[in-house]
Amino acid sequence: IEQEFDAIVVGAGMSGNAAAYTMASQGLTVLQLERGEYPGSKNVQGAIMYADMLEQIIPDFRDDAPLERHLVEQRFWVMDDTSHTGMQYRSDDFNEAKPNRYTIIRAQFDKWFSRKVRQAGATVLCETTVTELVRSASGKVIGVRTDRAGGPIYADVVVLAEGVNGLLGTRAGLRKMPKPESVALAVKEMHFLPDEVIEQRFGLQGDEGCVIEAAGTISRSMAGLAFLYTNKESISLGIGCLVSDFAQTMESPYVLLDNFKNHPSIRPLIAGSEVKEYSAHLIPEGGYKAIPQLFGDGWVAVGDAAQLNNAIHREGSNLAMTSGRIAGEAIIEIKGRNQPMIRRNLALYKTMLDKSFVVKDLMKYKDMPALIHTNSRNFFMTYPQLMSQAAQNFMRVDGTPKIEKEKATTAAFIRARSRWGLISDVVRLALAWR
Ligand code: FAD
Image 1 (cartoon, rainbow, N blue to C red):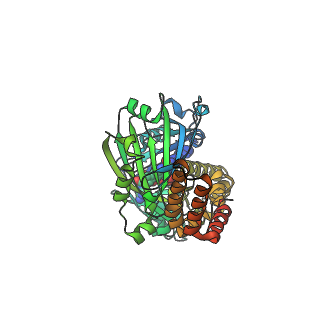
Image 2 (image 1 turned 90 degrees about the vertical axis):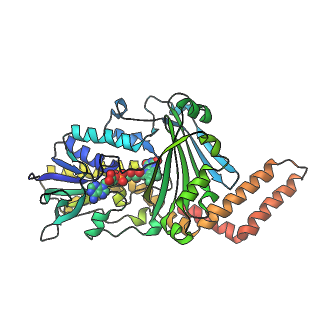
Image 3 (image 1 turned 180 degrees about the horizontal axis):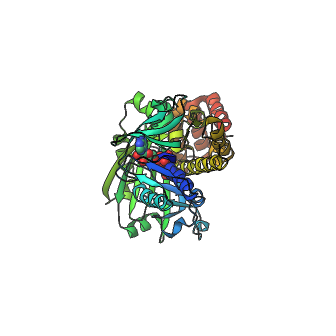
């Protein structure tokens, strides 16, 4: 490719597509490079897609985007080996004209998003891995090299939307490799069932959808979360835990997933299904304190490559889309002022991102990752077991006076954590949640 572009976008995931679409639709010349056979072929996501963030990029996306179900119900379960203690919210208000959250299948969704990027005028090349960033004598990023024949490709600015590994940025010394305690390894399966079976099992009508998120002894005292999302004719189901915890415990993600599937609360929901896809992927979970440098001379980083992921609320794709859009808008603004794409000017991206929900949300939970990482046994083993025992003690009617039941429950909590331990856990959790 001889042409010099206004921008090169590395990666065609949520963040890369958002950035490429934003810039191309405003007339910038954009080249997007994706190593996968097609956009979405390398992507693994649960997946819940947040409509508001896509609407800000493609307002009429509902007309033709491949959406599975809109969510009307969310269940959160604390599990021990034989039971779950649940909290759930369901509302008919979510049956609105423009629903707020949808389940999607990334392989199909990314293909659709990429088609929009092309229609907006960007050049998209798949099966092309960016191998290196090209720098000028002064160190400014001025283009990329790929695994295709031919020389470097030049651009005013390179948008790193390469996902959680961020190998390009790391190799170029722009950021450090994420630490094992800042990334989770998640495994996921797709279980196929007829749509009417899914609707009957989850009490759904038409395109209504339900989500279950679960934590507890299923992660074997590691910091982790399991999920189950209803699609039209399939159920996405998976579990993820911190890489540092896997390394320490030597647990296998496949065994954890098997245990989750065989849990008495989950097994009946997927009974008789046909498993068609299995995948594994990393999720950045270090939060605010793990965000690397986001911009420099000739480059910006967006989405998972910038570790922008809210593990507490299990949101990633919306932060990816928003950071991609904002990076695109910042670049358009700088170009409009005829200014060079240097660090000083690209700082605009960070200023705009700081004002958005992306950074504000991550800042709010900045102390959560460390708290969870250092107390995973309490939060993912001890408390789930205590909660289950307490619930069962409360439900079982066996002639024991209620006052004795209450005393037994209180004693069990104190025995497991001590009075001081309980107070300190509550205080630390409240402080980190602020
Ligand atoms: P990615 O989607 O990872 O895209 C990066 C792209 O860059 C890939 O297509 C890759 O092939 C390409 N690439 C990488 N290196 C190169 C290179 N050198 N050259 C060319 N191309 C390259 N988020 C939610 O919002 N809701 C959910 O329900 C949810 N569930 C999840 C479940 C699982 C199991 C996982 C793993 C993640 C989940 N997430 C969820 C997180 C969400 O998937 C990510 O936050 C989101 O995909 C980030 O988008 P991205 O564009 O930054 O990165």
